[in-house]
Length: 243
Ligand SMILES: [Fe+2]
Ligand SMILES: [Fe+2]
Image (cartoon, rainbow, N blue to C red):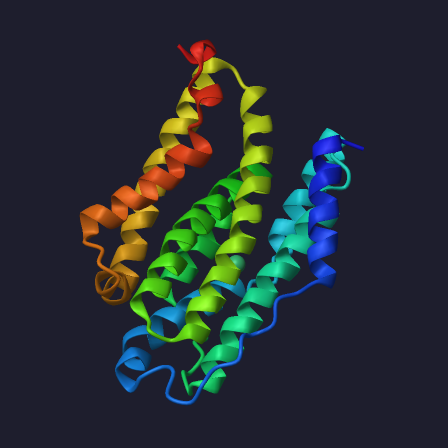
């Protein structure tokens, strides 16, 4: 078994038996103004976390078979279960505060469609994009609300997303290293462009919440780009071998 994958398997196995629970809220913790401000936005993220992940699991299965990457499928299944738990936590918070659930959302639709387009690597690229932008969003949501319950929930979600990003960037880097310099360059350029476009899409879908957390379109895009650079453009990827 690949040792890195073994570490990730242990991490996700452990977390699957030590789930976060929704922090207790106080009556009036979320004001009527805040409920209106975040309602539709949080419902879109709740929907995004809810994916059954069937096509992701299939893509992981195929990749595991072709690259002898056991236990990748098991890890991916555990990651999907953790995302579904995020959806359950957000859903419980929404129910408690009378925020209606969404059955569809255009930003969610875009991400789902793109993920189905190709193999595991593209899937991972779209997923890590959503996770990194999601991290910026949850931090912003934490700043936009005075509700201690929601602030704690946001911190829990970000803590889990950090591990998801760690796994996904580890896998992507491994795949990346096997490519020729020209193909690597092309992949990086495409992912960067896609990432910027996706950040802009999230800005338009959630700008009321993001604005009230103090972001402008420029500072939000910069915050997302900083996440990208930190996780996907570390020095070893930008190294001499690239030039
Ligand atoms: Fe999540
Ligand atoms: Fe995640």
